[in-house]
Image (cartoon, rainbow, N blue to C red):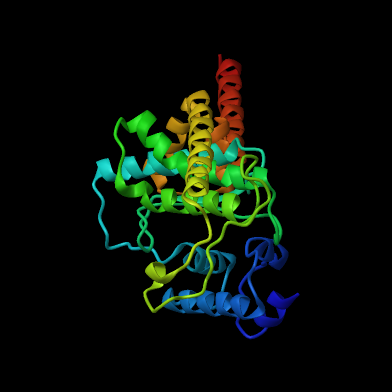
Length: 293
């Protein structure tokens, strides 16, 4: 395994399952994996640790995939709650969408230009996607805006990048990948030949005005139908959204296990064990009191 080869160059503390690490880094090249471990080593050094543990590797992976945490950026409680609802919208729609990638992590700690992040990771490297997977991706992207509408009662600028990505994905489905039943398997991309160095102004297009309108209508239909599907999911799982928001307000970042337990409304194994031990101790104390009597 490539990761093990690169790991020989740094000091490792404790046991690390490199197979699990590899599953969490789909699409990473050998150079990317080397950079991941080097970043983990730098994080360990900044903490004055003797070696790299799984925590530093996960922190390095999150930094590479989601951006560096902006710990100096202070959000108001209202902004944090708005962000929590937005990210919960992404997460709940993804969790209950059949063709979505598993949720890896949710955070309302600002990273890069984003106030929060919901990260989905495929279980294996993927090189092609079917239409249903792309539709679910669009549903997840618009899920944040839908949650704002349903739970906050107002919409924010936080969905700007989501809407842009959803629109670009829908446009590619229609114009490049032939995934529109209305327009069929035809490529409607523009000719890349430039008349002059004016970028978009200089591009020649061979699409008629009537076809352009059909393309716009199809893109709108895909986005609108995905929006309505996301809205239905969030309305059906309102309690799960609220639980997720409250948990995010409490600890700010959730891993995949914490996400699952919170959405399902069940106790984590650690909490269940603590409760069993506590109940057992209470029972022993009760028996002792009765024997004394």
